[in-house]
Length: 104
Image (cartoon, rainbow, N blue to C red):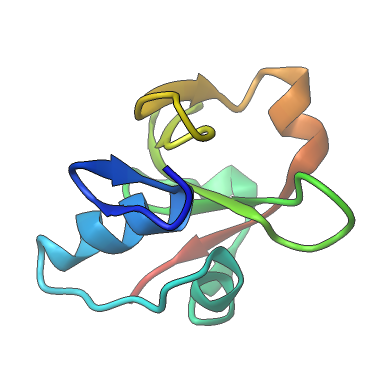
């Protein structure tokens, strides 16, 4: 759900913020702010728990997910859809990947 940041409904950055809060890490609220507070790493160095950032519309970061494994990430895709896995091999996500960040 747009603006959602709890188990009743998440948007993408709300899911990331909530997940990291569960392990004691406080993150900013929006995907752009989370991106600015991440240490950028090469996509070749992806590890579980890293964040993947996407530009869905225009050329600004507007979506974030948490890398799981095997080129998959977990995210809250859009209003009305539940939290799910997606593949970085999917052309849709490949074309929109802006960067990979790590929270230290």
